[in-house]
Structure formats: C-alpha cells, structure tokens
Image (cartoon, rainbow, N blue to C red; front, side):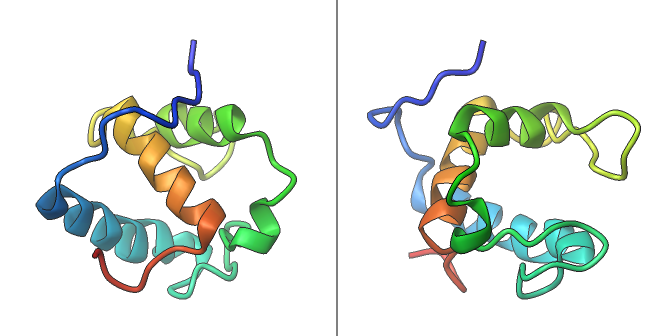
Length: 97
C-alpha cells in the first residue's frame, strides 16, 4: 500500500539532483523536456492538481501496464517516488536545490 507521508525523509541533496535529472531526461523523453506533454501526458502542477497523490506515486513505481509508462521501482524507492510526485505537484524545479 502506498501512503502519502509528508514527514517521510527526503532524499539527500545529491540524490535530489539525480532525481531531477532523471525526471527531466528520462520522464521528459515521453512527457516533453519541459514536462508539458508529448507522447505522455503533461506533468505540470496544473495538470496534476486534481490527481490523487497515491495514484500518481503508484504510477511512478509500478507503471501503467498496457501503456508506454514503465515501472521505475528498480531505479527509485517508493520514498523517492513520493518526493518526485510532491515536486511535480508543486511545480518541478529546473535543477535540484
């Protein structure tokens, strides 16, 4: 079960930079380099506003069978997926802080 935990430990700053790069490059290859859409749907804060947090995290971790959305569970942890989704819902950074 995936649960939203606001107090979950955030990835350290080096890992945050890696995750931002992963989203910008790997996710961006389908969702657009600016994350405004492409083959995949847009990943902007506006586009994700009404989407359930847990559902978005599950999509990142497990993918969407029968679609081009792959599972990322071998590359990132569930906690890291939660961090990515929180960042996307707030407006994804150009570079990690």
